Structure formats: structure tokens, C-alpha cells
Length: 376
Image 1 (cartoon, rainbow, N blue to C red):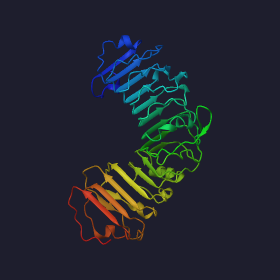
Image 2 (image 1 turned 180 degrees about the vertical axis):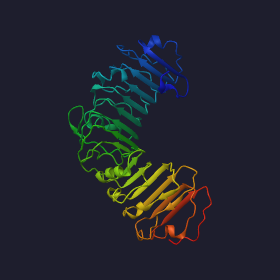
Image 3 (image 1 turned 45 degrees about the horizontal axis):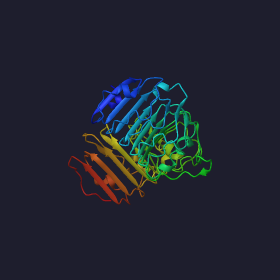
Image 4 (image 1 turned 90 degrees about the vertical axis):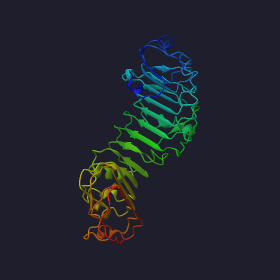
């Protein structure tokens, strides 16, 4: 069975080595809600071949998908999720997505296209799917940001999640878009986007303004960033990357807010966090801390940090150390401190005494706190 279909809900059929959709699927009841189909090399899907599946909500097509013809999805207006994976054509550069390829999928909400080495992708390939919320395009021979972004111009009011990976892009330039008649068009801001994930493993240059239409980028994977680009928030969910490397990205992209899941967070020197001086907010999320002490001395070095949240997901008892080092002096910049899911022991008045301008302190955990009066 196709792995994509293993955890699908509802009536599900997984079929492989398909050479004729109508013939091979003739034994599948028309009320099935999920189809996972592996297409044999050389087969061209005919118009309306799946139209009898009136209850179909999820469709996964995999294998040899050279050209998806108009009418391929005819009668599938109930489909909400579509995934295309051309893994059998990874060495071939002749796949095509034509104008309004998906227009019959009027209720489509999620679309993913993987490993389709496209030689043709029409400018209006995504026309006719006004409800699309989540778009994923990975390893599809895009050589510029424009190759994708110019094709989603009309989705700025609907799309909430965008994932884009390209191994061919070496320079990240500001998108340069035109319509089907050749007239220049300006890319809109994607204000509704809640999740943006970009991966360009071979990019070595980032032009200023390349990501100007995005308010926030959730995850950006680029080996080298040599031009500044301002981003407000950034998520680092790589447990192996050093916090010093995190700070290098923060500096190069002028990031002011980060969410970090990182095992090396606590053992940092002043020089390691030097490039994080512009940070105003740090959230350390779902951290599986395996030590009995938490070193928060970084607050003395990050003099623009006004909001710090730490979230531990374990049952160990921990102590707070180095929060208010007498030798470092008062911390005048931190306004908000959250320590959540802690089993903190031995809280003393001196631990928070240096936080002279703290407005909000939240301590949350399962154990009883042993503390005297706090003078803040």
C-alpha cells in the first residue's frame, strides 16, 4: 500500500501499476473518499477518467505524469487535497502543467507537487482554485523565485501556507512578474500567510528585496546569505545547529524575533551571541532539557531583549542559574519573562533582583515553589 494512504481516513483505495484508470479502478466503489494511484510509464490520463468518484476528497497521483491534460480532474469538485509526485520522472525534464490545469477542482484547499521536473508551467496554471490554502512545490526545476511566485499572484487573499524547495536556484532575486500578455505586474503582499517554508540548498546569493512580499518566513534554509534582508520573525527547529549559527542568520537577516528548539542553547559565550544583539523576543519551545540547571546569563548580553519565554517539556527538577549575576549589574531592558512547564526549585529573592524594569513574570510548573519575597 502507498505510504501516503496508510493514515488516510474514510474509504481508501491504493492502486499501483495503473495503465488505464477506468479499467484498473472499475472494481473500486464510486463512494470512496481517498485514492492513491501509481501511474505506469507511458499512460496518459484521459479527460473525466475519475469523474464517477463523486465523494472523492483526497487524491494522490504518483509515478509517470508527463502532461496533465485539461479535463483530467473533471467531475472532482469535491476534492480538497491533491498531491502529485513525479518520482519516476526525476531524470526527465519534460513534464508539463498547462493553463488552468486544476480549474475543475473548485473546492481544492491543499495542493502539493513534488519531484516533477517541469519544462512547462503556464503562468495561469493555478487559475480556477480560489479556495486553495496550502501550496507545496518541491524540486520541480524552478530556477528563480519568480518561477513560482509569479504564478500565485492571484492567491494572496486565500493562501495561508506556502512551502517551496528548489535545488536549481543559485541566486535569490526579487520576483519580476508579467501577465499572460507580457504586461508587468507587481507581486502583492501575502498578508494571510501563516506558514512560509523555503529551502534553497544551492543558493549562494540573496538580493535585497527578494522576500519583500512576505511579512514573516517560518523556515528559511539557505547555505550562505551575503546580502541583508529584513525579516520580523524566524523559527529555528534544527536541534543540531549551534546557537552561534542561529545568531549569524539573525544578524544577516535583521531578525528581531526568534523561536528556537535547540539543544545547545544553554552553553553560550558572550562572543557566540554577539550577532543576536538586535533580538527583541526569544521563545525556546518544547525544549527537552537534560540538565539540572538553566543558565539564563544571555540576558546580560542581549541588551535589546525585552521578551523571553522558555518552555520545558519534562518532569525533572531544575534550578535557575546565572539569571542575575551580581558581577554583571542590573538588567534594564527585559520587560517580560515566562518560565513555563518548569519544576523549579529553590527560588530566591536574589534570582530576579536584577530585573529592574520587569513588567510581567510568569512561572508555571507542577511542583511547589520554595521562595521568599521577590523584590523586583
